[in-house]
Amino acid sequence: MTTTTQHRRSEGTLAVAGGLTAFAAVMLVMSGMLDIFRGIMAIADDAIYLSTPNYVFKFDLTSWGWIHLALGLLAMAVGIGLVMGATWARAVGVGVAGLLIIANFLDIPYAPFWSVTLIALYAFIIWALCVVRPDSETY
Image (tube, rainbow, N blue to C red):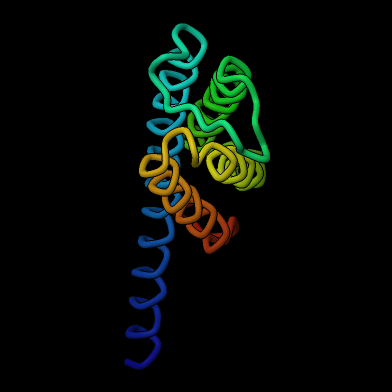
């Protein structure tokens, strides 16, 4: 009787772990798409964003656009790899989410609320990808 209860608990934990990976994959695809749009907006018209004259990490907004476009495409590719169950996608997903946290941190003066929101989302994606064990049956 005791082993049945423990077995059910582990099945529930595995279901949650699979759900976290699926959530991280969907969030990477969606946020990657939004970063692509954000990059296109910055490349096409610099007047959309607020400009800060005395920013230490000052880049041209077109450069920020290309950075967000490239990272958004990479995030979408990794998210699709996670959906397909690729083994490389978890490690690369953590790395891409970390790069996106850094890019959004450096982009705070141009879009403060959106950057802080994405930093929190990417931190959750990193947590979701790190907490799942790849040897689980539902992965």
